[in-house]
Length: 373
Image (cartoon, rainbow, N blue to C red):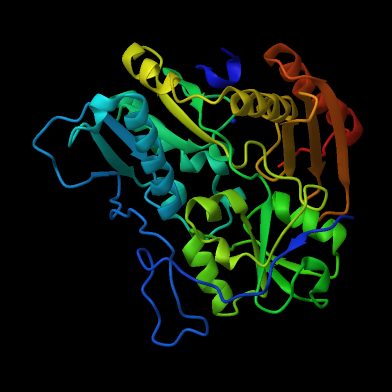
């Protein structure tokens, strides 16, 4: 349908919630002997131990009709099981025991946790090994968080499906304050996202950011509980999918924190020559999400940002059915933030042009050298 999904060989108010203890998913964490805030997860998370490359669930004697490739984090597995459930709902014969198999693939980004993502190659590190398994036939489809997917897909793969998008906003999580604005000067915010860092420092220059704050949702909440940092920001979509919204202190408005391109969206890829799998997943596609993500990725592709360039973009449909797009680029330290917006028809051709045009405007405003690594 479009080049971004086919082979190419990547001052505002917040809605506050009551402060509450941080809770953890026991499936992926060993509970310390003494936790300042004990308790629990609200639903069972499907977790399978990840290997150095590809590790499958317990072998089923029946040959799987569809092998779903995914990372091994609780959030990634929640997304894979959501995909499985939707496949079964759309294709009842897949409900048979063993018809769908979840295959866990440990990516380079999962293995290297001691360095900031920007220092080891950026977001593509969370998809490369999964894409390789797809191309090699080890899996039939790949389930990705779309914000991790490079704008240009690997050769021999397509991404024809986006599931309905979750809430795109970021959640503020803190044990001592109800918003970023209430934090005292010098407070440390933990986030590995340069996009979040730049927007935080632009609005609140008295705060500090710990960049190498990585790990899955549960790991980052554990670090917060241990007071490694005073607060953190997480995607609200992930917390909702994990049924962990009880940890949210407040939700940042889009004016305060513009989301990452494709945040909250799940993408499903298959091999470009696998018509059977393409047919299976096509029935799961949510077109409104797909068009919004395509617009945002056109913006990102036009900017061609480096691994050290904070970029944010969000396309949505307004009450009258029009596309509203907001885009942003920033310097990593937040001293310079450039923003733009567009409105147009909510249709593929027009939305691709909106994303491209917005990107070109910011390129001109930024000037040479702004996007250098």
